Image (cartoon, rainbow, N blue to C red; front, side, top):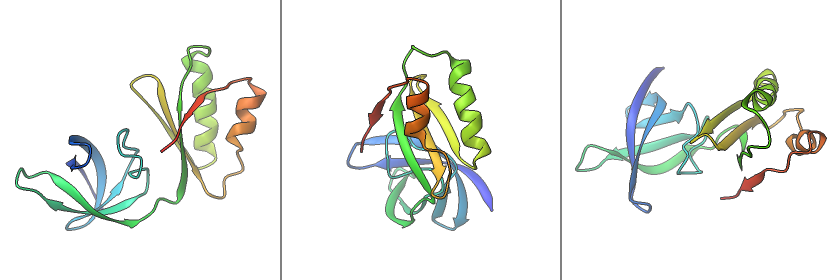
Length: 134
């Protein structure tokens, strides 16, 4: 499979996002991370596009939903980056993925069969992040 950087234009939001993807067919791609602006485009999601008149990709349809459960949170300054990294390392040990965008939006991807209960982890550390819902 070939990795690529593509620009995806969202007609509804009228924004263009640059994404790292894996190209799996001529106009079919798999997400390699999470898009901050389009909550449907998460790690592992496969989608079909068409090129518009500006040469940017527009999503035609989602071909395959992600295997991961994705949740987003606003991070608090209550904890240091090193403390967040401990949680991120554990997520990765369990086969998951995490990313932080704009320094304060955390996206966590957990395999559907993952043993981590993220809400319990938050409770243990008395961490009450605000969850971002679609």
